[in-house]
Image 1 (cartoon, rainbow, N blue to C red):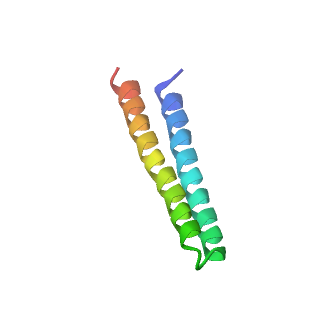
Image 2: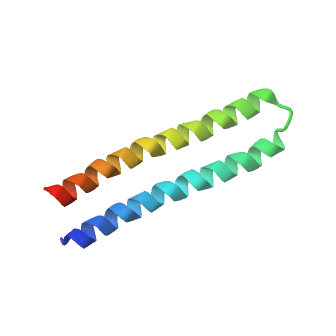
Length: 73
């Protein structure tokens, strides 16, 4: 497998992570508007968004390590 193909796979994984985060954030924003006034529902929605965002951060860190491995070894 060529270097370009390996990096294309990693780029695809990165884009997939971004799509998941954006979809989840907009979905939770729409659901949060429906529950306006319900403090518990708003807090739960915020917690879900933060979990997805921080999970994506760790996924991005993992992709960085994978790219470094692919390029430098």
